[in-house]
Image (cartoon, rainbow, N blue to C red):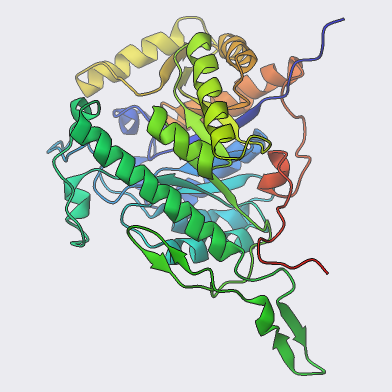
Length: 402
């Protein structure tokens, strides 16, 4: 007797008009609305219509660029964006079930500020907040802050000793950053607020804690000024392409996004992350590993490939990505997701090539196909993002047991 297939988790990564650089030129793209709240509200409402676990919102501390490590001078692609955390805070109250996970750049922001912002987002969303932690090795972004210099770094430098030293330093700093943020979320015990009008006691000061975090690049005294978030610990996630970032996922995250191009790679990546988890003493904790895929999705055979070719012609070059690029039908994508799921991935973060086209194709085409196969929910079954991901609300590290 065969066991029933494992249920899959699904998220979408939202970035401007979509992940293809010519997406903004499509008739459905709404380029004049990219900096409006209504545009983002519509995208997240569509994702919630599809019962997705969460949306991530891309961000950076420099203008978008066709180069991964330096600015470009292009004028034919979307440039300029809104702050991801603030978008998330605006759209969260307009939704009821879906998780909201903005991107933050750990390299140049303060853990104290971000812990407070994501805790606030957890209150605003009543327990559906997360954060995607990213590092930056871009000199032009460091120049916006003037606090540190980053040596010149190109993608081809990654494998050199100097490149590895820089990358390891940035990701070790990100692990410290997450540790400080998590400590601040715990720095108020759950019952620190008394709010007793009769006695005039609002707060129990004994239940606020210094975290006294000391890292190599920063220290944080604590406590936070925002009480413990509704989830206790909002979801922490990170994108990872190699051993050093896999270690960050294993040490510090609840969800890692990875970019395998086939089932064999997926299996190897999951095994590496699980081994790193064990080494970090987290072998018994649930860490989800989601596969990232860029998707061009159309019902008619060949239509997605033709659309991709048309967009490439508009852009002037073939589109490439760190992630596998899927072009095809919802049925074909469902087949691929199940195959990759059997290799150990517990979910997927899909990147719609054209947000106005491929997001509805995910929610109205792919999701019903996965539901027919019994591998995706037919209704939201939890009130928090931790609940959707099957993660318990963690105990407070500072609370003493009576």
